[in-house]
Every structure is written in C-alpha cells, then in structure tokens.
Image (cartoon, rainbow, N blue to C red; front, side, top):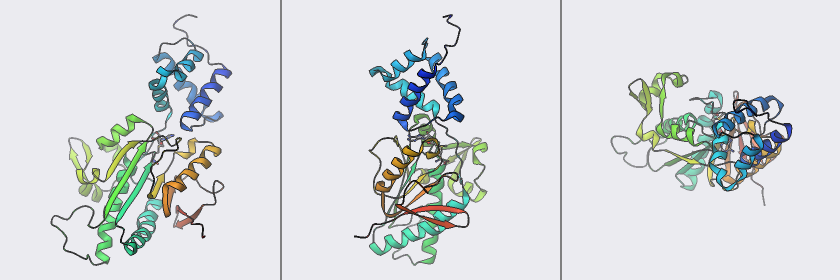
Length: 300
Ligand SMILES: C[S@@+](CC[C@H](N)C(=O)[O-])C[C@H]1O[C@@H](n2cnc3c(N)ncnc32)[C@H](O)[C@@H]1O
C-alpha cells in the first residue's frame, strides 16, 4: 500500500471496533452514526501511523493500548452542552423536586444534599445546578425563619445545609475545561445578567465561575459503563448521554442509577430521552413542560 493512501475499513474491522467501543463505554453507533465513527477511526489511525484498522484494533486491546483507547473514546463523545439547558425541567427541579427534598430532609434533620451530574461535559450543567441550589436555599430561608444568627457576609449555602455537586465524565479534556470554569461570551447564551453579576467574575473577555460556586462542585472521572458509580445521591442528572447508548445499555444504566439514588430520589434525563419502557422503578413527575422521575419505593 502507498503510505499516503488511507486504508480501507472493512465491514469485519468496523464490527470489531464497534463492539470494542460498546464494551468500553456503552456508546452504540447505528447506521446513522456509523460515518461519524468511521471518520474518527480514520483520524486516530493516521495519528498512530498504522497501516490497517486491524492493527489499530490489536493496539487497542493490547496492554499498551489503554491510552489510545481513552483517546479514541474522547474523540467519539459528543460534548454539546449549555448553561440553563432545558429551562422547564430546571424550574421543576428548583421549585418542586428541591422543595420536596428540603422538606423531607428538614424533618429528618439531615442537612446534607448530594447531586450528581453524570456526563457533565464542560461543566455548564453542574454549575447551573450550583447556582440554582444557592438561590433556592436562600429563598427557602426567606420563607422559613433561620433558627440561628447568620454570619456576615452571608455564605452561598446557608447553614446548616451542606451541598455537594458531583460532576463526572468519561472525557478528561472536558473535565479539565469544566474544572477551569472559564467561558467565552459565546458560551454564556442562556445566562441572564442577574446570574452573570452574582456568580461570575469578568476576567478579560471571559466569564469565570466565582470561587464560592466552584467550591460546591467536585469533578471526577467516571465511566457509566462500570459498576463502581457514586452512591447516596439525592438527585441524578444524566441528560443527553443515554441517547448514545442502545436500549440494553440504557436499561442497565437506569438500574444502576436506581441503586445510586437515596429513597425517593429524583432522576433527570434529556429532553429527547425518557425512562418509559426502560423501567417501572421510577414514577414520572411533570410541571409545565418539565419532566423528572422519582424513585419508587417498594413497600415491605
Ligand atoms: C451531550 S453531552 C451532555 C452534557 C450535559 N449533560 C448536558 O445535557 O448539557 C454528553 C456527555 O456524556 C459523556 N459520556 C458519554 N459516554 C459516557 C460514559 N460511558 N461515561 C461517562 N460519560 C459519558 C460525554 O463525554 C459527554 O461529555
């Protein structure tokens, strides 16, 4: 073969590579998305200076291929996201689900809240949740008397509450950008000026998430395909991630999410996604056009 020619990807090689990617991260490439997979495989092959897709496959399954496998997966993820994505659903989260959670937790005198943004991409989703949480808790204390003197200046999260937002992804590059928390004007589309003023610092021509908001969010690598996922969450946001998995993988993941949630915990999926037909362990909750799913508890 001429070294400048691109090797042909045979049907058999494509099947092998598709199966490997599915096994590694759950991503499924149907006919519609196969050209995208082919394109990314071609790029990686070139990068690795290999002359056939079969040798690329051999590299990926070898002991030394771990790094390349991560690089391939990173190239295959779709990382599109934005601040305040799906406003109707976020309103349901802030006004209903969170209110219900705060009421139940207050009754039990358990003041810790844990939310997991699974597939957080470049951080807009978990930071949006942090801003909404901070506002919701302050507003909660406007309506319910604070049982003690509040320190000055007021902390972002009023005592005795402790909020942890865990944000995870399979892609290290997006996690690094998320941790950085600095966004160009172009990425600030959904953020109105009230939020910009309270929760961002203007640094040059970019908007940097304020330190106090950042401190609420903890970023980590998690592959949703694995069994070792973060437990004891009050709510899980996994939006626009499952749509890249096939139905079998979606069912397995929803089962895992059920176990990762506290009793009566809430699950939020993307606008084009649904838990209907995947499980009967969640019950749908609606407000205007926002949807969430609440864990159903089996009565003994
Ligand atoms: C389209 S983005 C969605 C971002 C955000 N949740 C939203 O709705 O705006 C999907 C993200 O899921 C991540 N992802 C895909 N497969 C994953 C897996 N197996 N484990 C963890 N994250 C995964 C991708 O890296 C990507 O950042």
